[in-house]
Image (cartoon, rainbow, N blue to C red; front, side, top):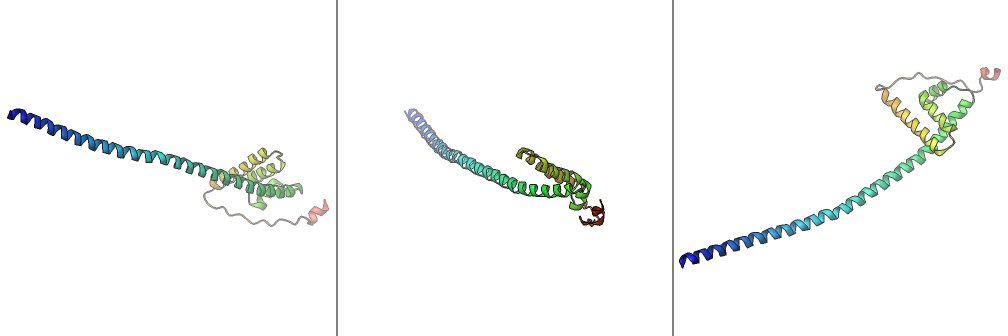
Length: 158
């Protein structure tokens, strides 16, 4: 009988150990479930933050495009007026400090009729500026050119 008692106690003890282990495992799984729920709830917050950021970036780009569009239109009109008085593109480049490519791009925006064409031309000016600026690693020194007054004697003679 002692053997039977010993076997029963051993099984009882094994059951208690397994029950304690299962209880601990259930408790850990419940904690994991709660933490995973918290993790997945934060995805909505991340998505909302990303949407807010994207909207702000879109608005900033729109504001920038409006501001630079007005400035580019004013600059191109001014260059076109000078060009209309007989100055060459090379002269405009010298006078403004821009490259001939940038001057041509600005002049092109004056002649563009649709907003899409103007936007493309503005981007060309920006890209030409970025390309020309990055192509020169060292700052170039420019010789100062004093433009002749528009009402000079040579202009009046013709």
